[in-house]
Image 1 (cartoon, rainbow, N blue to C red):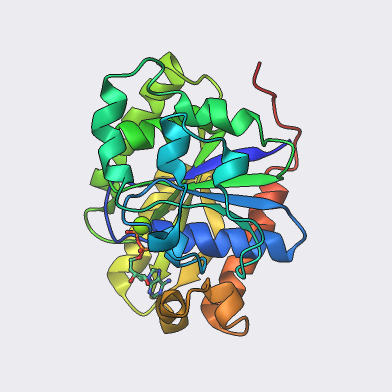
Image 2 (image 1 turned 180 degrees about the vertical axis):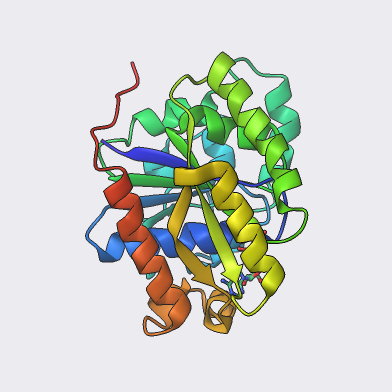
Length: 261
Ligand code: ADP
Ligand code: MG
C-alpha cells in the first residue's frame, strides 16, 4: 500500500522538483517502488525524470479530468528508476476546468486508489501556489514534505503553507500532516543560513529532518541530462545527501500507516 506525499512550498525555486525526483531516485535505489506525479504545468519533474513532456499523449491532466486512468497515463520504468505521471502546459487549463466540476478537490485521490498497491511511495511535485492543483495533491496525501532554503523570509512564507495544511486537515483530509521540513541548498559557510536553520529547529523541533541537502552544482546540472542528480552523479555530495534523505524518510515512516477508508 503506497504512502503518498506532497512535496510542497508555495514559493517557486525552493527545490521542490529537485527534492521530488532525487527522493524518488533515492527511494528506488533502496528498493522501493515509486511513482512521481507531476502536478506542475511547467513539467520540470517530468523532464527531470527523462520523460519528454511534449511527446506525452496522456498526462495528469487527463487523469484529473477523468479521461484516463493512472495505469493508462503513467510512464513506467523511466531511466530515472521509477514511474512518472507526467505533466505539461495543458495542465494549466485544468485549474480553470476543474472549478466547474464536482469533487474537484478529490480527483487525484480517487485516481490514486486504483494504483496504490503498485507502489511503496507516491511523490507529488506541487506547483508554486496554493491552487486547486495543490489542493488535489494535499487531499490525496498522507503527509507533506516541505523543502526550504534557510533564508530570511523562509519562516514567514511557511506560515501560509502551515495554515493551508491545517485547513485541509480540518476540512478535507484528516490524515494530512507535515512529515517534515527539509533544509535544501544549504551552505554552512553562510552565517545567516546557520541562524535560520537553528530557528527552524527551535520552532519545529522533530519536524526538521536530520538530513541537510547541500548546495551542489551537480544537482542543478542533472535536469539538463534528463536525470535526477542521484542517478546522474551518484558520487556527488548532493546525490549522497538525497540517498541519505530517502533512508531517513523510510525510517521515519517505520510505523504502520493508517489506511484511508
Ligand atoms: P522548485 O521546484 O521549488 O521551483 P527547483 O527544484 O526547480 O525548485 O530548484 C530551483 C533551482 O535550483 C533549479 O535550477 C535547481 O536545479 C536548483 N537547485 C535545487 N536544489 C539545488 C541544490 N541542492 N544545489 C544546487 N542547485 C539546486
Ligand atoms: Mg518545480
